[in-house]
Amino acid sequence: MTDPTLGELTVGVEGLALLRTLHSGDSGARAERLTEIRDVLGRADLGSPLGSEVDVDAGYVQWSRSYDGPLRLFAVESAAVRPLLEDRPPGTVLDAACGTGRWSEYLAGRGHTVVGVDRSPAMLDLARTKVPGGRFDEGRLDALPLDDASVDAAVCALAMVHVPDLRPVFAELARVVRPGGRVVVSDVHPFLVTLGWQAQFPGDDGRAYIRLHAHLMSDYAGAALAAGFAVRGIEEPLLTAEAAATPTATVVPAANAAAYVGLPAVVVWEFERM
Ligand SMILES: C[S@@+](CC[C@H](N)C(=O)[O-])C[C@H]1O[C@@H](n2cnc3c(N)ncnc32)[C@H](O)[C@@H]1O
Picture 1 (cartoon, protein in one colour):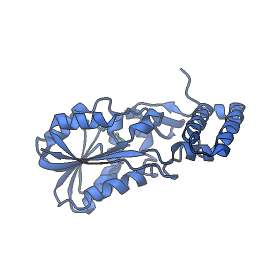
Picture 2 (cartoon, helix red, strand yellow):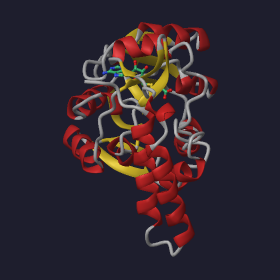
Picture 3 (cartoon, rainbow, N blue to C red):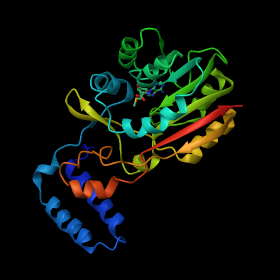
C-alpha cells in the first residue's frame, strides 16, 4: 500500500469545501472550487507523500521532540477545558495519558498533587521536567497503575482517540476516581477523524502520522454511563482558522478554510463518578 499524497488530500479538501458551499448562495466560490480542482489534478508536485504511518509507541518517541510546539488544537481545547479545572479544590488529580504534562503543569500550578500516567517513556520524561513535584508512571489507560478510589479527580486530554475501545478506559477511570469525583475528557472530534484527520507530526524521516480512532458521542456516553459516571456537561468547540492549519492550508488556503473552519474541533466532557 502506498502512502497517501498531498494531491489526494487536496482534491478531498476541495470536494469538502465545495459540498459546504453548495447551498451558500455563493456561486463564485463554487466556480472557484471547480477551477482549483482542475488545476490541482494537473499538478505533479502534489503527488508528494503526506507522511508515513507509525504506531503509537514509535510515534510518540519522535513526536515528543516537537509536541509542545504547540499543537494546532491546543488553543481551542484549552479554552473549553480550563474553566472545568480552574475552580477545583486542591486534591490529588490523575492526568491520564498525560503526555508531556501540559495539564499536569497547569494542575500543579493550582495547588493539586498530580499523578501522571502515560504509555510513552519519552513523553513522561518531559512531563517530569515540567512538574518536578509530580509523580509520573508508565501505564495504560485500560490498566492504570493506581489503587481503587485513590484520586479526587482526573483529566484525560486528547488521548482516547488513540484507543479502539473506550469501555475498558472508562472502567479504569471509574475504579481509581473516588465517588463524587469529576473527570474531564477532551478529544479530537469524531467529525474530523471521520474526515481523515490523523495525528500528524514531523517524524524522523519527514512527515509522519499516528492513526486515530473515531468515537461517536454515544460511544463516550455509553462507556461512561456503564462504568458508573453521570454526564455533567459536554461542549464541542469549533475549528478556528488557526486550528484548521492542515497541510493543504498553504496549497489551497481558501478551500482549506471553507472545508474546515466551523466544523467541531474537539469534544470536551465533564463526568461525575457516582
Ligand atoms: C496527543 S497526546 C496528549 C497528551 C496530553 N494529555 C495533552 O493533552 O497534551 C496523547 C498521549 O496519549 C498517550 N497514549 C496513547 N494511548 C495510550 C494508552 N493506551 N495508555 C496510556 N497512554 C496512551 C500517548 O503516549 C501520548 O502521550
